[in-house]
Every structure is written in C-alpha cells, then in structure tokens.
Image 1 (cartoon, rainbow, N blue to C red):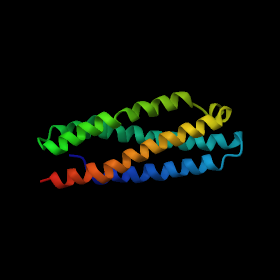
Image 2 (spheres, rainbow, N blue to C red):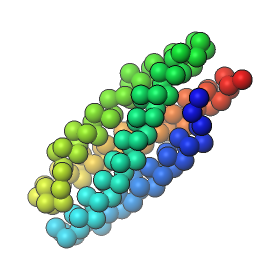
Image 3 (tube, helix red, strand yellow):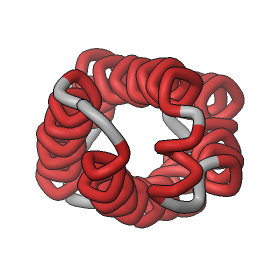
Length: 140
C-alpha cells in the first residue's frame, strides 16, 4: 500500500504551486509575464502527472482489490469521477503549449487555468478529507 504521507505531501506541494500560478495570473501585466506563468504551469503539470500515475494507475486499483467494500466503493467512485482530470490536464497543455500562446489569448487562458486549478483543488480536498482517512481507518 502507498504511503499516504507521500501523497499528502504531493497535495501540499501541488496546492502551493497552484497558489503561485494564480498569483502570477493575477499579477499579469503583459506578454513578458507569460513566460513565468508557462514555467509555473509546467512545474504543476509535472507534479500532477506523477501524482495521477500513482493514484489513478496504482492506488485506486489497489484499493479496489483490498476486499474492503467501503474502500473499494469509494475508490471506484473517485476513479470514475476524477480520473478524467488527467485527460483534462493534458488537453489544457496541448491548448496552451507556450508563453506566446498564453500571451496571445491571456483572458481565455486565465479563465481556463482558474477552472482547471479549481477542479484539481476539489480533487485534492476530497481525497484528503474522505478517501485517505477511510484508507487509514481500514488499515490493519
């Protein structure tokens, strides 16, 4: 079983990165500010790629196989509801591949980035608040 401490630490790191990204978006003054935004988003995306691989590909299937019906049910629900976030992240990265593209349609980028960050934050909150405590309670 995964160490939930590692996953929680990733959540904390991701939220700090997301907060920094939103700060950069809020402080945007022009094209020269697009590069730091693109760099920050790339860092956040890299962390989430690793995190999604650990949770969606390994943790959730492992939880389903535990034999604990409540844990398995919640893991299946979370995988179905939130597993699509990895695809949303990849689609976002394809749509906004560079600082030039970001600067070219900044208002659209900012709205899309805020929406994606909110979806990621909701996922993190639900896992921290509901899934991880259930896993800990079911652990031998």
